[in-house]
Image (cartoon, rainbow, N blue to C red; front, side, top):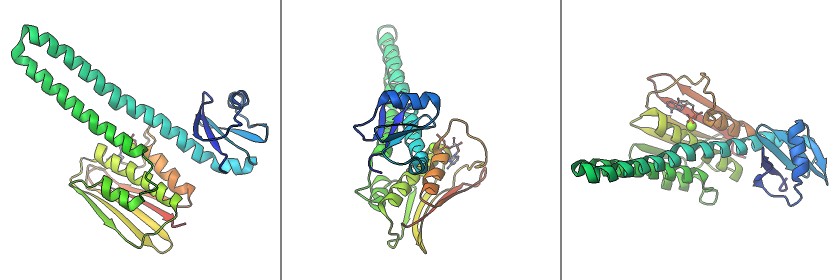
Amino acid sequence: MNQAFVLDSRGSLVAGADDRVDRAVALRAMASGRPARKRRVTYLPVTGGLLGARSRLGVLRRFAPLAELVLAERARLARDLHDSVVQTLYGISLGADTAAELLHGNPAHAGESLAWIKETATAGLSDIRGIILRLRSDADAGLIATLRNAFNTPGLHLELDADAVMSPPVEEALYRIALEALGNAARHAEAARVTVRLAAEGRRVVLEVADNGVGFVPSAAFPGRLGLRSMRERAELLGGTLDIRSAPGAGTVVRAALPAG
Ligand SMILES: Nc1ncnc2c1ncn2[C@@H]1O[C@H](COP(=O)(O)OP(=O)(O)O)[C@@H](O)[C@H]1O
Ligand SMILES: [Mg+2]
């Protein structure tokens, strides 16, 4: 399957590689909503884009959820960049205008605007670092090394079981799940303490991210939000499960259990 690739809704290559991509045929498949085939390449429409490969349709269908994840992650990245980078730069530019005006009319207050600019830039920097961290593929460094390095943060506790050995795809999936769960704890939980536990349980590897924050109702609908969904899809794609235990005021535990592979 190394010739598989994912195209977005405009027919641009988003992941994978294949020099035989025929954009016209791909876009036709997308418009009709039905698979198309040309030069031994099959194009299969999925939500928000296309999955293509030189392989039989049945094989391709099994990989469709993966393509949807890639496309969803891309849309999410665009949203994150908009929410943080664009808003931050806009805020800084407004703050600079205000500071410039105050310098003439009311110089004593210009310092407040400058402090505000500094604060906005610092918050923006930390957002961007978070986005880059999520994008970086740390498959080489390994899940445990990455967790140790990236989250050497006060309030974050790691309990890593040295027996937790897993295949690279499982490691990559757990890494992404850990980043999403930690990102959620940081963004939504207002927790004083977050514990990440990685352990071998029989033939499974279990990752638990627990916070003592505000909690939420996991069965509620979160329209337009993809994080919880993509964690579950990643786990299920590799034959695993994802459970979220949470309630308002009671903290949150995200538990992914995957076959070690
Ligand atoms: N650890 C958590 N603590 C409190 N609320 C959470 C936590 N994780 C998720 N949530 C709630 O679930 C919603 C959906 O999460 P998610 O699908 O990851 O979307 P997003 O993080 O982009 O908002 C969040 O907006 C938040 O309200
Ligand atoms: Mg999230």
